[in-house]
Amino acid sequence: MKKIILVLVFLAIVAIGAFALNDTEVEQEMNRYVTLYNGNMEYAPPLALKLFGSERMNVQVTDGEDAYWFGLITEKGVIVESQVGNLTELSMNVYTTKETIDQLETGELAFLNALNSKRIRYEPIKITSKIKMGFARFFLRIFS
Image 1 (tube, rainbow, N blue to C red):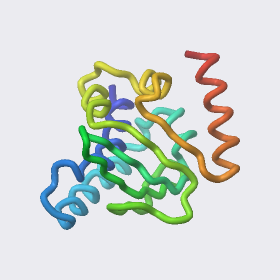
Image 2: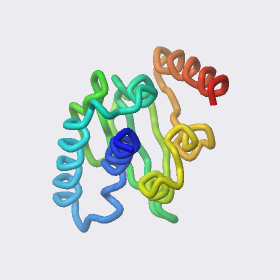
Image 3: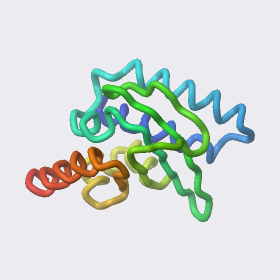
Image 4: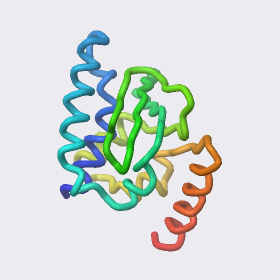
């Protein structure tokens, strides 16, 4: 359960824009979630750390017709930088929905199921990320 909570915190980091009234509130909430996430790294699912552990990523969360973008930089699984809006020179894009985040939070959906059903999608940009994600997709198909 703690593993899924950590994944939820990660996804919540990118979803907070849907609920905040202004950029300052979004940034404050993002910083709070980053601190919470980084403080619970020992509960991170190994697959999540392998996939998203050292990346520069833009994450899009859709809620109905609204779409929110967040930039995250991770090193060895730790979020070292976050921002509202997109990063430049990124290694991947990640896409999900508020509904997916809600279902992960309630336990209706498991992280691996979200990946397999493409409710959490990732699009590698750099060649090293493409190779890593190719191996991850291969092993997900075999072991799921």
